[in-house]
Length: 227
Image (tube, rainbow, N blue to C red; front, side):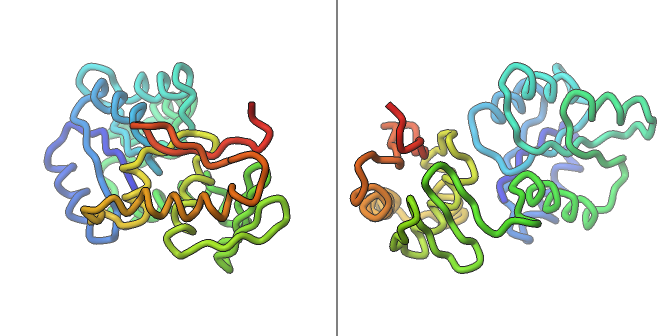
């Protein structure tokens, strides 16, 4: 899970890295609201941990701009040292999905982050991801397009899953490599090879391509009838 932490307290940041990284999380950190907003816009995150009190832009303004100006649907867990109803209501009203009051349990933070990601992916009640003509069964690892089963490798499955979760948004090369290989991507151009293999199965038998490459930017899924 790729998490953006927007927090100016170095001790809290260190605790989050020390607890979450061994659980398999990949963390990016921003120490102020402006830097956090920039990272959130430029990258695809599974969830954001956002402190309410930040230098420069505070957490409420960061959240508001992400939702209203950039229409970014990433789940946001807001951290606040203020245990008041007003602060909680304000955070939720500008688009935060959940909140924790400091000091908080790291075990509870882990559970809430995972619950937010499951909720936004609708994976608690749904085992199949669909976009336009593509269907991916997460229980069996099988995929189909327009009702026809397509052959995919285990890595092709991971790539397609990442693209479906973001469709039709662009997914950067770095984000795809992180989904497939974690923090240890191969030095060779392996991703391009696997993208080519996935495209052969996903697009070649059909009239219109759905797996689109944006040179220098990344990859995305587009509707089969896109012009």
